[in-house]
Length: 232
Ligand code: E4P
Image (tube, rainbow, N blue to C red; front, side, top):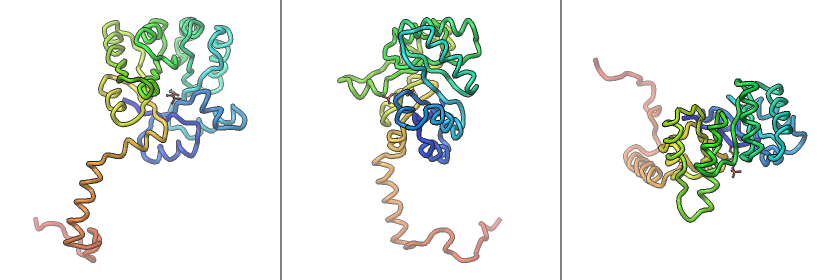
């Protein structure tokens, strides 16, 4: 399973790359708007620091011709772009036409919020279904578990469409991964929370307290020049 950062901030992307955990970057219209400045410059800045593919969304969701023209333009802009097409009648129509015209164009359908929508996305031939399960999960009374049924449908029908989940906190992140997501994308504010667990902190503090009682602030480097290993 791949991990993407949902961000338009070169600084955030560089930080996550330094942690060694991300495969690429997803953006959306809100994120590119948030980056400020000229839109193409913002996209170039993301491409410059991403370790892999970058998702970029077309503007609008009702006009097939406009969606297709923007997809062709983005394809020419960079071959590392995965083009996000909105979940709508026009979006799905554009995907099926674009994939017939140029099967190598990488297309994702975004803002997918149900199993039924995910079926249509795969049927139209999209490369990736971008589920908004994380944001939805935060708004609903009950857990959102749409990855497992989508995985079952895709596997049974041999649809090659990959499943991207929008990650949130550790519990749903784990569920999305275990249920069969191929990719999880996550904002920096949520990625940071994945490192934490109260039990881990508790054990770290206990290890450290035991060590300090016996050896104070010493580390393994505190024994001088004695580098000899065990007698062989
Ligand atoms: C995923 O590709 C999206 O960019 C992202 O998850 C959008 O959801 P959000 O804006 O609610 O975080």
